Amino acid sequence: MRGAEHRGTVASYIPPLASVPVAKFGLAVVMADGSVHAAGDAEEAFSIQSISKVFALTLALGAVGDQLWNRVGREPSGSAFNSIVQLETEHGIPRNPFINAGAIVVCDVLLGRLQPREAIGQMLRFVRELAGDDTISIDEIVARAEQETGFRNIALANYMRAFGNIHGEVDLVLGTYFHFCALAMSCRQLAMAGRFLMGDGRVDGHRVVTGKRARRINAVMMSCGHYDNSGDFAYRIGLPGKSGVGGGILAVAPGIASIAVWSPGLNEAGNSHLGQMALERLVQRTGWSVFEPRG
Ligand code: GLU
Image (cartoon, rainbow, N blue to C red; front, top):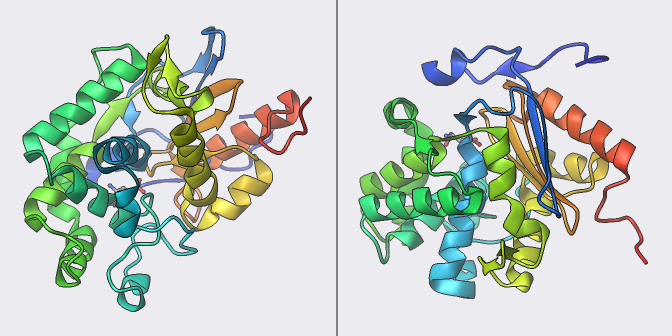
């Protein structure tokens, strides 16, 4: 991207992410009227990683409603995505569903009613329906690599189990979590899948969530969607968003657009460096912001 001094660093904790070329860049914007604007590598599937936490949260709220908030908070953590320190003082209740510990609890909640295979199938059906695209898949190589190297996530899950906040078998909960992280989607598919958050919870006349729930998921994305960089993202971009270490970001301009950007080079907080820059330029040019006075 013009004006960018560097592209950040590609995640290196698993080989399938480490081998993604840093030069990749894609952007897709789906407008409220359904028109799609795509640029660069917008059709290439990448590992959505923690962006899947938005879809998992939506499914868990659908399954158990606000009871979910008894087991996971909705406050920014101010810590890294995989931090264990707060869990000690906060009795195994993760700060929010968008850090790893919180997303692992969300998976455990889903497994309260489903077997892992069913929960993974439900997730796949959900994102395919949201995106209107049956070709979306889970990258089994990524899922396996996550499993083989996920010692910190294994520690988080066991630690929360010790506090009684994981009810199922840790292995099964994590297997589900790793498969969610391994969802592979393109910017176009991701922006399409985010449409339910830009309106009143409906997509193509079909209700996905209530308008109130869509607003609340957006609120959690706004305050917690970028790890310990969430305040800065809100300040610079002013839209709800969720990032993943694969270099993707899903952002929502309520009433206006659903936006997905992908560039695998990350900043120190684990967010796409060029992705954030691109979103910043987009909102500067369009004036899109949830803080923009209307009417
Ligand atoms: N699979 C990654 C992990 O659990 C997800 C990290 C992320 O995208 O934030 O460590």
